[in-house]
Length: 136
Image (cartoon, rainbow, N blue to C red; front, side):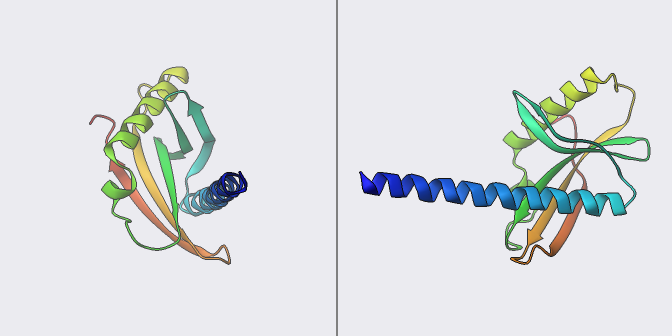
């Protein structure tokens, strides 16, 4: 019994650390994009089919941003960071947002921001503009 409790605690702790690291990455990505002139519209837009980390505006373009936080520079190719299934979830969530906010005529795109964090919470940001399209 003790082993199962210990296993549960370790899994829970690992999940909490990943969640905390993800939130730090999202804040760093938002700050980076704001410095590039983007305007924040919404954080963590959630629907049943998925979540969009950041919705921002770059000029007249609506930008749906997926943030990935890593501890190393391994696997930062866009197609490896956001696979096809994840892209489909993001597309559905974006379509719902567009429908709810009547933004059909507005140009939009999907960006991916990879944040590579160090223990001191400083890090490196890699921005992939127009990482994938609305249609598959």
